[in-house]
Image: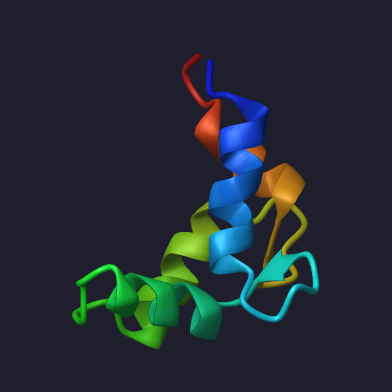
Length: 72
């Protein structure tokens, strides 16, 4: 089981504008900062869509947390 505080910190690192949601542009930007320039916006959107339970195209903390705990 993942640690919710660590997950919150990780989520906040991706949530660049602080709105409580991770967009594809934010995900792509952070992945580039982490050294992965190959994550394009369509790839980032696909990653988000795979965990986006409400279908809004954005990742909320609850959706992020659920993705961290799959299979636990």
